[in-house]
Length: 279
Image 1 (cartoon, helix red, strand yellow):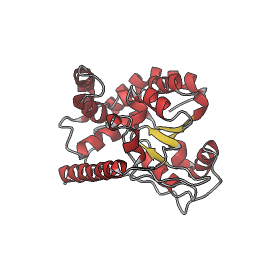
Image 2: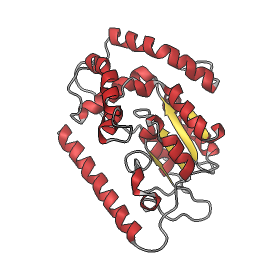
Image 3: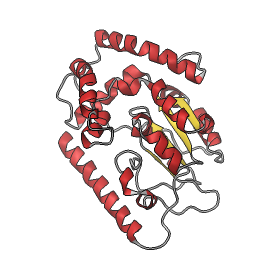
Image 4: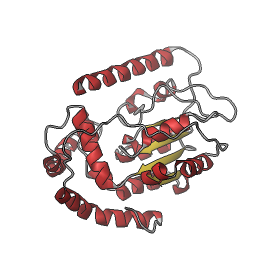
């Protein structure tokens, strides 16, 4: 069943990409470039935020949540990317949400060049919880044969080996997306790359836990940041495709080890953002 879900997702992305190629091949105008991006992080509530934003009456969505243009498909060109989006009228906005954008090292510079006026929203979750959720997600696609502790131990070598061919190689993308359990939780170094490429005031950084606990307030903050009129959707359901089954691999020992690993990185993040605390 898990492998079947992966194949279905792959087929859907293929159809979406082929349709964009077809639209881009037709002479004349294509869609608008996005006004803003939800850039991550993975397993941090980006799907929920995507649905909340898509419900806004002044937002028109593209062909899907994750278009991955600035990571997997950058060589296809901006016309292919624009073909995923609608043409927008006065006061309308369009966007996408690809969590890989926060993490991939080449994305901030690419985005700065292509979207010089865009704004960006990042959601950050307790990196310990995020790491285990990421592991379960990868397992659900049949891409992780190891238990959680072993996968964490294997991560540095896996990523180093994959990156030898460069961050845009197929091997690197597979490892960076699937096996970056701890690396993706080192948020400060990722945000520093973004702040070096785009003005800091165009990046809104939120905690996932705050979105879940106070969705009305946080959603209103996001709308203000995006210069969108106040709006309240019908509900704030949590959207996730993963269902936890079986005994947890996030044991007390593994949790303590991860908490120790992330402590200096969380402190660095607090200094970077001026937060009094993180998690």
